[in-house]
Length: 169
Image (cartoon, rainbow, N blue to C red; front, side):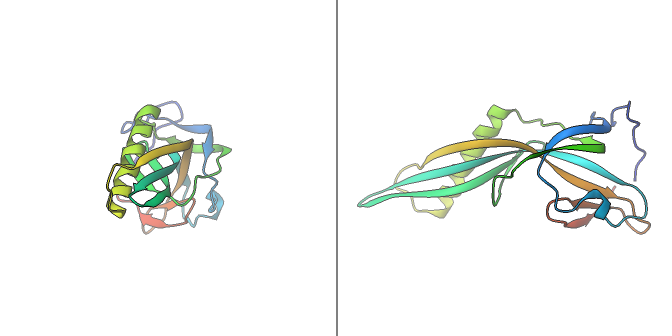
């Protein structure tokens, strides 16, 4: 792994700090202590805003059709992804964590989620008119990723799914 900043110095790549933080996170299914590592296990807290969304489609000669989605806005990469559920967020004290900034403001998150739900609906259904998109509650949450040092290859572990991938650096 690359040289790490101290608790006092910002990470030169992101400008964020490594330290202890109390964060609203998606509860991990894989705890830091459960990660297989030969060295230390660090953490990255990744910002998301998750919305419940409904699209109403008017149909000629038929009743309206309503479709539900969960739209997860990746606030660091400006992407909207589908999710299975809106997470229940818990407050956690996380040590040795790199907190990535939420670069996308809340109003742009809402706009991106709305536009993406509109696109998902338009791709799935033959529409005679534009669907009416309603975004319900939005939840700000951080997802934790564990960075594990291993003799053969460092990995990043998704704390929710347990998926591992090689950390290329």
